[in-house]
Image (cartoon, rainbow, N blue to C red; front, side):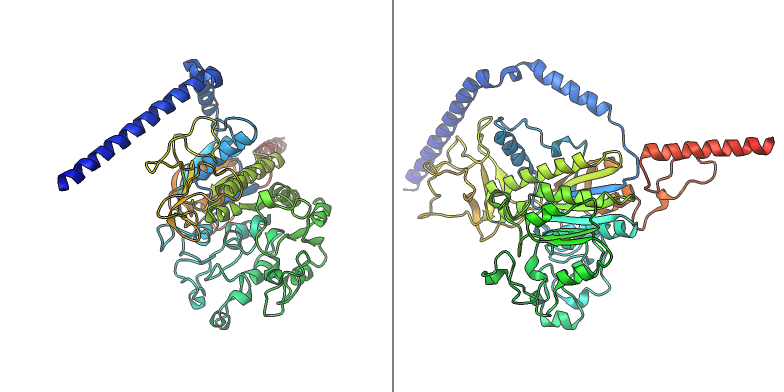
Length: 553
């Protein structure tokens, strides 16, 4: 009996292996038949050699930009791991009727690239609060905590006291720069909150979200810290309901009780924010019409909250009510760059992560495409000689990219290879999440299912209501002054310190002091471009020479 079972297993394995080999041969034949008609010069080795020579020459001609960074543009793709980055590149190319794989996104043009290790002090795989505290405050911390060191404990207010840490946004503000945050989530969410708040829990959006014990111990909610901690010049995102008293009707959704104000302390933080700006031109807006009417040339402060909670996905955005991340990024930069001392701006593509949590790769990739468009707008509005632009992610998501798809095949489609259960599978899948839907112990049959729609949920290996994050390193892309600092494999908290060094802000300013008399080294005080500082140094030398000649005469 046992011998019969073993023999049956061997037969099954041999049949399966033969099927796999047949499928591979068919793929190779199909792929070969398509190459001659679609790939053109790519079959010629000289095509690749000449491309490599051009790339090599551009790298050889690259010189480090050692100017002081007057401005810092920090683009953060929440959950935008390497797989998401790659798949978004292909999708963006395919949207423009290209095969996609060879497409060059704005992010791809950044000359300096490194990797950041994302683990938190207490977990191998982190959340957005711990990671944001690392790359914004320069200190690694525990899961779910914001703007505090690892001595603080999740949800325990008493451990927060004395363990607060400040961020690059505050360092820039203290140096006289203008500062801002732009996000597609609520402005109290983990990433933006870590730039201005200190909280033992990332979930304390308003006082209604806090336990009574935390209030008694003297902790304050994130929204109240938004208007009270740092004088932020531009605040753009969602999160209206955490700013107003309980029962306050939302101006856009007056009949939706879940959109009404949540605060139990009776404070209207929007009004408080306005009252703090006496004598300044300060605008609060909640819709696109009023947002478009804001003149950046005459505006000192802007608070724009377009939704009660997080903003809508880009593919579902009401274009008459809510601006895109490209539009919000542009408005923020135009307001902030009026400051002659420069600015710091954090721009978060926050809903990349939220789409992944729902297992919706279509939405996540389209959010990443919009995020790349915002990066392009940021580069268009600033000068690389004086603006350090960095693009990175806080953590990755368990998205896999697999299946030997043909060149140019929709990245949201199905693999031409079927699994051993004789059913097709999608090119993109998740390690865990809500997509694990088995029918009588079998995967769903996708033969007649469209997987390219915005509502499709990719299959996942392990069933969860929401995906977890994943723990691989994330890319760090940089261009502008001191961009070469962001190379190699580094701890994530290094990012904040490198930014501070490049912009001459924060506590470590030893390299920014004016040079001693007779030293011709350019000053790095952050004022003006490298060319402007060189002119100042030359003028000073000429004046010294003139003074010496006068004394001799």
